[in-house]
Length: 98
Image (cartoon, rainbow, N blue to C red):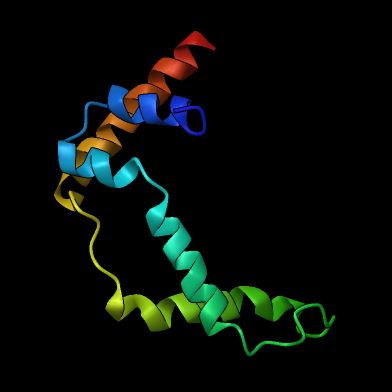
């Protein structure tokens, strides 16, 4: 609770479905994608070469794209419209109070 307490409470305040809420309550998806990118870009040796710095986003995007077919859908993805609406409402409330 100490590590992600505020974010966890924020997910609960959005009143999302149980499956979508459980998917968004962890960072497992992001950490897994980081490991995929790290594995697939392991052969890149010259990250800091000045001529190839503009290639870094391309290498990362290529790694994600090549793994896309193996990715699973987010559990509760059918509730994405509800998530978007809830985030919009939360943003409006935040803007009004600011």
